[in-house]
Image (cartoon, rainbow, N blue to C red; front, top):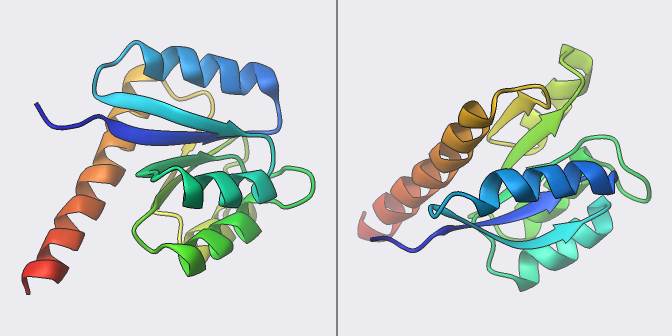
Length: 135
């Protein structure tokens, strides 16, 4: 069996982080290695915890999701960011994708979709890293 996908959960609402922790802790394919309540914490933790995928909220205090995504891309391009948001307008989501997010899901997405998409973000990054190293 491959090692679990290492996740960082980033949201300014503790109840949301707790819910996401519950979703992923029941699946052996994932390991939640940390949590953050804002973008500043997210960047610090993601770069120190050897994270594969960051589940990122967009609207947070101190540093929002888009700014955090930009900082993560500068710090470590191999980290994949999946945006989890309640906002589905282009005005909200497009800046995150342009900043380097690899995808987004609405917070009301079913559990199965969240698990599937989180795994896909990691699989895509592993494939690309392998091609880059082997090429």
